Length: 239
Image (cartoon, rainbow, N blue to C red; front, top):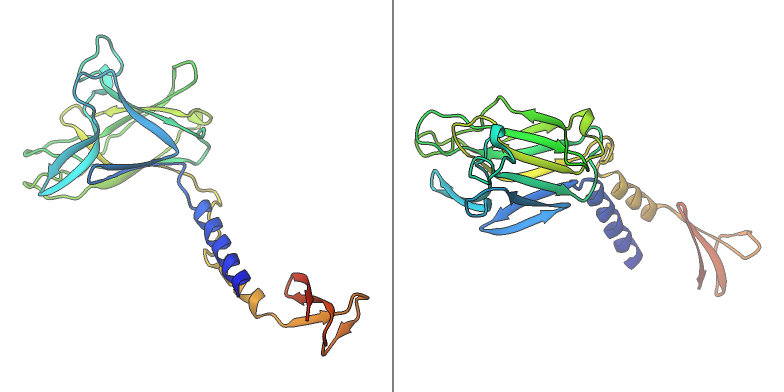
């Protein structure tokens, strides 16, 4: 029984590993969980905009706040408009990866705000970029919308890089990111997520067959050393 439980635990770990994100960032009440890389606020003069508190429609969020502007990204001298987020991934981007931005804007009037994303190579050059057209929902109490996820597919030219710069594309208002992920598909998850566990269950329920050390099947083994076969598992046992 102990062996069966161990196999279940191993299978569960394998499944969770296959479903893991390349990168993820979230903050629960100001306590940040970040896996797979590091995001920092660069070239700005405002207080740190990572884990930035913001209250929208009565909900207090801790966010990644995009307050710099696309047209001013990285310019000197440093300024609020020139500030940007720098995400350095532990793994290089691959074809089919997606950047998932779960965000909102917070404005008491009709307004728009979206993200600008630049993919940076080892020499510091922009090899590809994405300028979003669609605004994130307005979570201000005057509108009461909820944060929404925009999934941006990594451009082919960005494959192999591991540095991403982010600012706001539409200059009218800040973008508040609640969660940020880089996800990877392409067969990472099994077609049937229960397949591994089902295989283990089938193995555990398979009939047990005993053989002596000469390989002869024994129907009613008595005391002694035998070869025990159950499903695809073969072990030596002492009865």
